[in-house]
Amino acid sequence: MTDLLQIADKTFESRLMVGTGRHRSMEEMVSSIVASGAEIITVAIGRLDLSNPNEKTILDYFDWSRYTVLPNTAGSATAEQAVLTARLGREVTGSDWVKLEVIPNPKHLLPDPVGTYEAAVELIKDGFTVLPYIHADPVLAARLCEIGCATVMPLGSSIGTGQGILTMEEIRLIIEEASVPVVVDAGLAVPSDASEAFEAGADAVLVNTAIAQSPDPERMGRAFKLGVQAGREAYLAGRIPVRSSAIDSSPGAGTS
Image 1: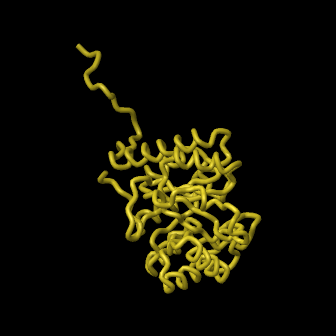
Image 2: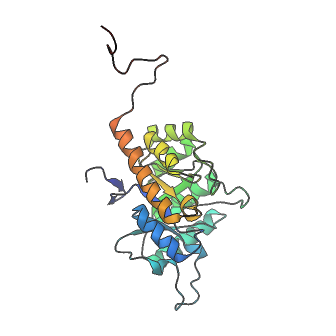
């Protein structure tokens, strides 16, 4: 493999990240993630029940020698809460990687740009590898790159809505200007959404609800794997120019 995804000091063959929320059962979660070929798995640390050491959590269902766990700060409404949750995640998992989410309003679940920036500054000072979830804001993305975030993760549309990518123009600007990998996160519903992100030059995508809530999560996980591969291959191959008029695909055919 020569086309590897590099984030901070790690490399990955898969460019698909997956979440562990909203699955109907642990068995469906595991089978769909295995089928997806993903190597990075996000876990909402603040939503784990850690009060009983004998009770299994999501963390117990994976062989973490095969995967990179990406603790996230889901449920954090402020920068302060996100920083505390990230530190808890590091204590529980031993990983200094964190998907940073600061979401103050549970109605629309849109990320707080100011809180995200403030938390990112604090976490980077504390030695974390920070992957921030943001609105598709090219200015904020540039600022987060400048302070040392390992990626930027602009949303395609609101979390869990399945609306696909509604922010493509802004995402294109982020891709053009970013000095770190761009991961399109949230709102992706079908593999063609993932392909669209890659055809635009994204480095990775993160998918959760589209797989977890599919009637057949394992098959959908496999479908997203193929959609990611197709989109990335198309981007590397290069698309033809868009023309305003038709051009014969077989010049001279049918002429005498």
